Image (cartoon, rainbow, N blue to C red; front, side):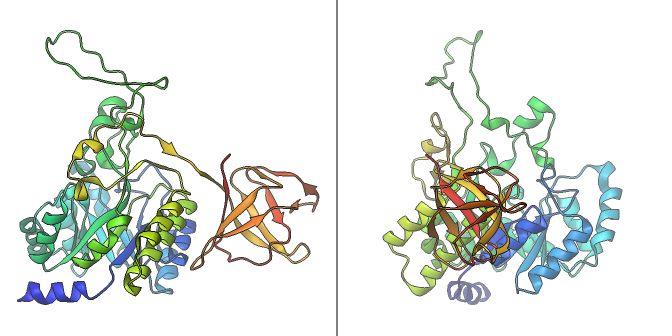
Amino acid sequence: MANLAKNSERKAKIPELLVPANNLNTLKYAVEYGADAVYVGGEKFNLRILGKNFTIEELEEAVEYAHSRNVKVYFTLNSFIFDQELDELSEYLEKIRYIKFDGIIVSDFGVFELLKEKFPDAKVHISTQANVTNHIGVKFWEKAGASRVNIAREVKFEDLKSIIENSSIEIEIFVHGALCISYSGRCMLSKYMTGRDANRGECAHSCRWKYYLMEEKRPNLFFQIEQDKRGTYIYNSRDLCLLPKLDLLVDIGIDSFKIEGRNKTENYVSVTTWVYREALNAIMKGNFTPQKISYLMNELDKISHRDFTLGFMFLDDWRELCENDGVRYIRKYRFVGVYHSFSKEHDGPVIKVKNNFKVGDILDILQPYAYPKKFILKKLFLYEDKSEISCANPNDLVIISGLGRVNPFSIFRVKDD
């Protein structure tokens, strides 16, 4: 009966939208574009340790900023820990014990036990790295004291429904982002080839490299490879995108939809958050139509990504996940700048330039809780000396003349030629 009551509650609400952030600036974009929760990492013990991360002081500021806007913050401690690191981990936990995180994400059994010992009241979330694929696994973690489980990405939709129907704690899934070639990220390729362990946050993304497969001494063992002039990419995975099936996932009672990408820019975070927020709003209003889905997929196309896939969850034929020759980065739009300030003199925003653009370009401008707007760039000025220019270059501060006021969290883009 408890499970039935819990599932009735689940199906009566829209899931949480959980968004990545690799620094304080990106977290603010996630919050302003409609995230319900943001997950972040410190400078140690998480699976994005090579990227930008939060100092302890920045973690405190991040939580304060998010909480002031009714957004939750989850802290990642999802690296696998060796025995000689336990004292260092324990010391680190003491330093963050007073930060009011809304949940802590782990995958290592030892880290889980240490957390329950030091922070007995903390809500602990189980990472996808723990590879939970059935409801008995969920119940194991519930009995241990976990409050949420992120289900392995290899789970089929029908199995996911069964897991939810037989679970009492929160269920979270990834709906968007990079996929690994290995089982829910447990890949050793990077460690074998570069000495950088993906399971400890040091992934070199070796699966994205170009490979040539050669066999010399094993008769009757063949691996057919087709290649073009660029070579062949036998490990090159597609990117997960479950947006077209989001209404089905809402209907079965998922508690949290998670977007992958803690190494991504404010552009990626803003666009994906905006798109999935818009999709959830459409589902809530009952107008998640094929036309709406097509429009939102076109918006996702404005960020760099690999060819999309529905992954294991909805594909009946999984060959798409391994037939990856020709899978490539799609770059239809160029991220050209972010808001800096406003120029009354030129009635337009000052923006910090990320990539070059020029007079005559059509700017595509994304703002929180608004549809993108187009603006033909007719006049452009350097902010420093107010001189008129024809082209903006990376790291310039430039004035977009005549645009008027825009949201301080605006994202500026230009369609690639």
